[in-house]
Length: 376
Image (cartoon, rainbow, N blue to C red; front, side, top):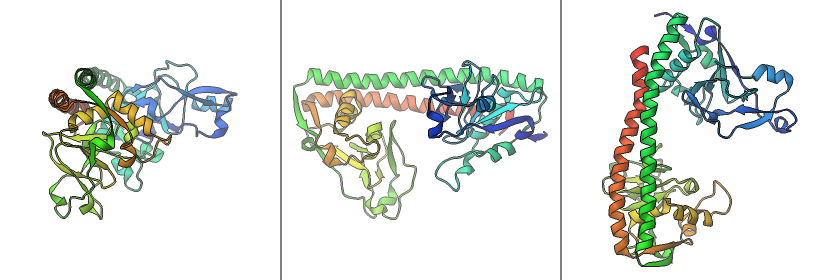
């Protein structure tokens, strides 16, 4: 098959650079940012505005059929603008591709770029920087199959039908995962209503794990805490691997720089034991006072979030070490009630694990669908 450079079939241009001078409000219009562009769709709930001069409005105005491609964050993420907002513009974090009439179809190009991103074609852009990046010259040089225009439209239409079904499956799984989280919060609330309760400082009922794993660190995977809970760590152990802390079954741990956004994890009985960064805070409930599983779900519940926020001092990126968390207060049901609630939470966790596996399987489907047409 013959291929042509993307720059030969579309005009490509970055958006307007954001600066303090662009925020006077004298000629203010909505504009799209990186976070507004998702895979084949837009998130427009909270649009920012900035000033555009008459010349800039001519240069950066979006037209129906324009393809917007993310330069950073998740390079290649793209969607075709449908013109739903009049006088809408875009900033420099986005590339605008305007296909040449009768030569290239926006939807076809969007699907091809998505396929390239899913197969890792843009990953090498991360080699010299910690921030993933898709520069203009790389996008211009990207080659696309030289397919007749009418055939492009037919391919895009067929693929979008299939991908719409995949998106329905993804949304259904997301909804089920949200329901499981709500059920977990309900279990916590029910335990507080049913049991005999008492108020304690967290430092009274929790113990911190400070000791490193030692010379046997290579036996264990490195684990991290994300907003979704337990996950493999992105980075391998550094020079001080022996200081990495053990996170075995019944352990709660969190990233002290990201606890405010929910980067908290729990190692359950079904999870593999591991180690985590010595910078993380690792906790266990004191024997017959706190069930660690119950505490983990409490910490993620609205009550736990309220407690964490009450201890924060205003900085989004502050470190909340154990000595600060220890000052917080928790209302605890009696231990027997905690254990009963913990058993229910364990079953919910198993359900969540199955749903997460299902979600991961669905996430692979777009590449499989696109591969049927574009190859491996």
